Image 1 (cartoon, rainbow, N blue to C red):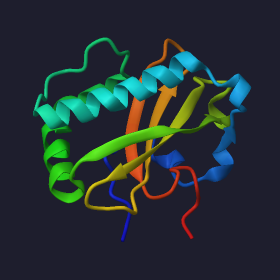
Image 2 (cartoon, rainbow, N blue to C red):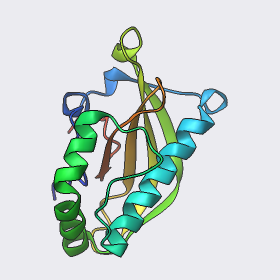
Image 3 (cartoon, rainbow, N blue to C red):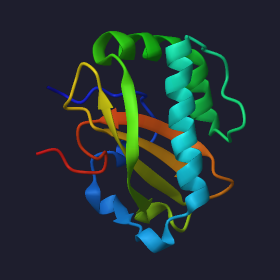
Image 4 (cartoon, rainbow, N blue to C red):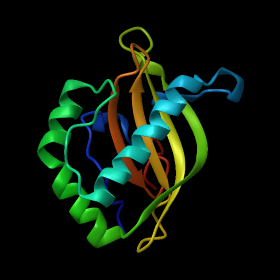
Length: 151
């Protein structure tokens, strides 16, 4: 079964190229960005569960991603509920730096383990976040980590 994208993001061109990412060692992971990523996922899941489609507060969100959420949040939540059932965030898996963004506007990918009620193949919740002021730029649920090449 194909990956079901939880939220499409404008960084799509980076999704299938493992060579674009370098794993961040555990000792070098920015815990603030890790916490922001985890909290954003939890807030997203809570909004969907509560059918609260209002704007996200207390986060820096990249403009394109914010516009996407404003436009699609309700539809995404409903579709996830129908196709995936309850989504549970488990634990932190890993963090990765986009190597080609280092000299421009560096961003990191935070990957968390997850499970869904109706589709056990989907097991990763991932968040893209810019190093500059911790702007969130995307969120996705996949069966493989989103930087691996398709086989």
